[in-house]
Length: 357
Image (cartoon, rainbow, N blue to C red):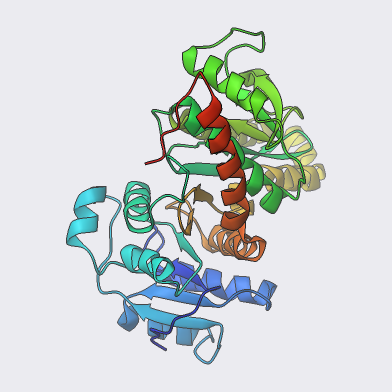
């Protein structure tokens, strides 16, 4: 089951990354294949001695959709990103990314060390032509649907041209994942009036307005508007985006635990909770981070999808399905054309100079 064949369209799964271990990842692959037999083929990257018996136990030993690519090392959550890249060149994460670089796979899915994944992806794959910095995109629930938050943590020190690229990256990802043909773009700031925000916001706002033929820019958006049905893509730097994402995730857990405590305070409330069980289940599904499974690192010459380190088989299954959608949509080729147009606009701009390295 070991493969070294040259084949695009595959999903390379880092089978050794994540808190729950390779058994959970193999279980996720089985769930994904049960749900969709039209799924692109999968290469599990990791220690063959560990993976082979797990694949056999899962009943996937003779499944032509599943192969194993041997990697003898594992990058742990405690490893420092650049040191791990240098010292663990035969790790499952590095080998999975190299499969994409060598056109033996089209997407990497990993639950491993976020810093190592971003550093390895950026160094091994490089950014696509015209994109200055990669960005993490996260799908977050809002009123009557979901929106894409970008950048969710990859680039905390952004320039206006980076945020213009983020808007393009997020717009295309939103179209693929949420099925919105012309996503409405909002720029995260502290007020919607002209002139509100810092110099970065002011310059980015001007750029986004001039990019109206490339993106569907709706204007600035404030924090209290984010979860209303105002925009489909929220653009910000990685510092703001990471705080927003982690605050939302912790808030979901806070209200969930608080609601559970309140509903168990007396028999009458417990009875009411039983009667409302269906509504609570529907609400849980709407805010469930497992629904989309991960955040792609967009803007590279290859596709990387980062799932939470604590992801269970259902979240990893969702990440594999998202990877499949990215392949079928040919996401990067669609992005490149708009980035080229945006950089022509940047070259003509008096307020920003493109940084293309």
